Length: 457
Figure 1: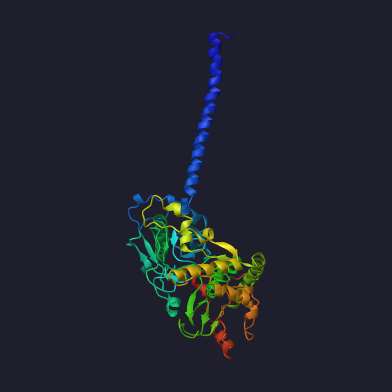
Figure 2: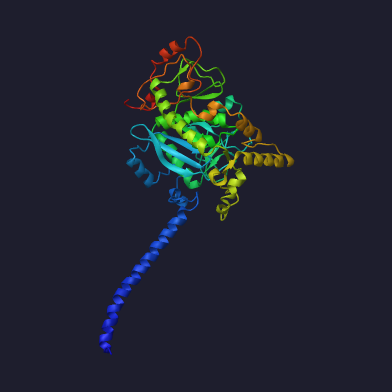
């Protein structure tokens, strides 16, 4: 038997390691709780940590609210000046808005990315007032587009309708990027998100930027996405937008955007003035830039062929707004009735057999007509049959920019350094007349478009 005084010593020896062990358990519990809280903060596209750090109740001047220190630190790491130019890109399908900022090399890269809280309608451009469609295209934002007194916390007018929209008879107004998470044709963010987006624009304007380019796309215009959406009646419009998309992917700078013959043209040196509804002037693209785009397109062609093989008899079903709202219905709990988030089309949509998609769209159209409505399906039965019965060889081959094989015979194919960044060869860049080469020679004397951005090139 152990003496009493000895047993107390033994007990003390046991107690010390037990106390340390229990301390470790408590520490692990605290860590697990912290991890759980982090996971909860990351759950849901509208409550991500990228905006949770802003406590709106402590914002005393929302118009002058500085960007968070984490963003400023990231700017420094990426070689960006706080007041350097920005651009904005929107991708409807994945519900993403990106802020890109110029670094010291005058190349634009992503500095912030946000999940769009709500956008209305389906993929495709806005056509008329009241269609609830969020716009797609290229828009220029000036300081006048900023609305510090918006009833939706803060707002930035997209500038719809632009010259392209007006030339094509598209109507609508007050299409905004704003807070409050409720949309009737706008791109609606959370209040925390729009506070940061507004600050990005404000700082860029303070730095001397005259206009911020907003590029709104239906989706990232990859070869696979272009194939998936090849049956949409919007595909020709999207191919036109893709030329501008490719310009940025190659140059990493916002393209110069003009409109003539009711079409967008990008990075063109012209012999005359552009008229949105009139005939295009003779236009040229810097030869080195043509080569750069041709090299870019080679990879695109390879990827498009792979997508064709992967999804040979399939196409994408673009979900309705109601279907997108259904996937995030739980997020409305605890908010007022005006709060109406929409899920991403990627979450609500799906790839389908073309035959099944045709049947589904036919049934939806019949039901809509039975209810006394009009058919406004983004992928109609007629368009599916047309695309599958008599596909256009050129469109099916690339779905993208013009390549060397499509360039008129009187235009020489340049052999400059393929690493020089440049825009796509635009379908409207070549005039079929005997004076085209003379006009191109004259235009060659003008400085390349990228001189606008570069300080020492």
